[in-house]
Length: 424
Ligand code: AMP
Ligand code: GLY
Image (cartoon, rainbow, N blue to C red; front, side, top):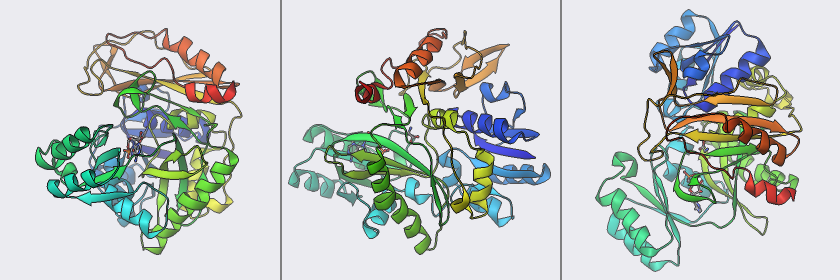
């Protein structure tokens, strides 16, 4: 059996690694992959990025099914291309992926289905957006409607900053077409968590909970990034919160999409804000797994991922059961110099420890050059470790981090702090 994973990040390295380990397929192709996937036995990188070329390849090689990692391919309709040709692919259609690709679509959808989220208004006219901000108490979060590679959300603490973010997007066109329509949203207080499920159009299988660290610096300071580290499970997602999220957010979303004629198949990610009062609100939907959340989640997965995907593709997720390692997994992202604004490339990486039962270093922005592994993107590696509790997982992960070197390496020293407070 051959499988295909699309993407090149840490999430895709983890997906390919998990699929190869538990399904024992003859091969897992990763398109385009990275230096980490290239170095794995049984995994083969493919220099392809075009949906039609990928579908041709999958047909020619008799690939059993394809899994899509990043949202960009889903936004381009890769699932529609494969499905039209009768080829198996796990991910939402272009229509259903609008939950992530248009924040305005997602917001209206949530309102139609009573899914709790922050109050917001959508604007294309800067003057109207400024009036809105002046008339409300704030603080505000200004969001580009379209995909903006993690740069589309500005959390503002002052009125001036909100006005400036509005002008950056609507007047100065800083984010291009993605920011030509914006949402001005009320700031939500609380603790964030990532809630990722698999859906087959009607049935839902929740995966283990997790928590990301979005800001670049310790103490949640500095600009937002794609994510600087994550752990699973997230203690903030108690059984009560879990039940509430399923009842108020996930089920209405999956049933609502089906009722609107765009049944959702694939990984669905709800970014949550959990209030001190136990309320849950949706910060965002993503139509894929999280990165870096995937790395600790899959490190804990004991079920066969390929069996779960197979069941989802057959509309039989109601018969699936996901089994998790009782231990905590924690991943620390090592990012390149200049990340997130202007990541530097071509720095040589040394000291990456080999895989053990407890440690796995997933690659993201890495490439092979002149016999060396070098940086080739913003987030470079995700050092992921299992431990009996968050403290142990963290100790093991950071001991591995300390062996790795590249010029300009940036990472947070406090991954897991929130959970540690719960453990104490
Ligand atoms: P998004 O791309 O919508 O997930 O936003 C990126 C990050 O911005 C989130 O993970 C939050 O940390 C923050 N954020 C977005 N919307 C809000 C909100 N309404 N209130 C507070 N923080 C937010
Ligand atoms: N780590 C956040 C995301 O994948 O969207």
